[in-house]
Length: 266
Ligand code: SAM
Image 1 (tube, rainbow, N blue to C red):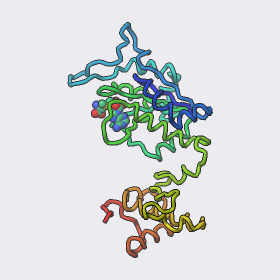
Image 2: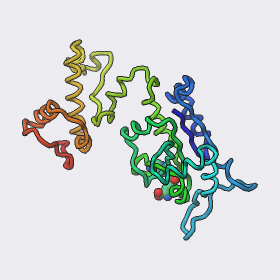
Image 3: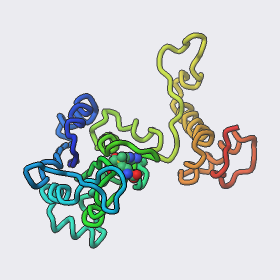
Image 4: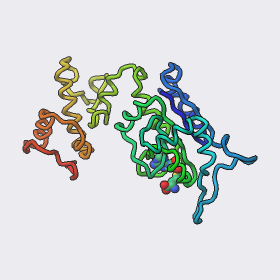
């Protein structure tokens, strides 16, 4: 997997990724990270990358030329045009933006299937919309809040995707059980000591019975999801056993569609 990042602040990535699973993956040859300073592609002696917005208003907007030149230096220009025209994406060109689709584990799983991902990190008031028209295949938001730049959002996505690259995590079981991997939140976890300040761990976890442990974890994952993020249950793959377990937890109400649009925390 290869990541290309267009940014005005490449140093941010070096410092954060120096101590992360991403740097281990880079050292192991499992992923490549290429940082491109947009300023290097800005024409003119002053290498200007932003300008005042047409129509007025505060702040600055990132100019279209430097970003397009940077993109065309790393991805074939014809490919950029063709994938915009046809919608058949070979190299996702991802703009980080609060107006984009909110990033999820499901999206990370989809992105991991590509060989290469390109990220454009905005700054100031954002980027000239023509970059979206000409090149961007995915507009992605980290959540419903506003950051000062796309770098932290790009880092989060790169890290989430890197974890999914085969071989990066020592034990791939962690990925399958992780929260959101299969539409549910993960069950609570415990490690030694078995008793701490009078608090014990659930007996089943020290029983040595793997089948029971696995059943307990599934049930806890279902209950937690129902309590904390009932909206997730609408898209989770639930078996009849899951539905019965949830119904039993909810007080024996009949098995059926699990409501997801009401607050069920009580
Ligand atoms: N004026 C923009 C708006 O209201 O939509 C916000 C610009 S923000 C201050 C500067 C840059 O930070 C954006 O261009 C984007 O790249 C990045 N950014 C901010 N919030 C983000 C979010 N929630 N997800 C992804 N990127 C974000």
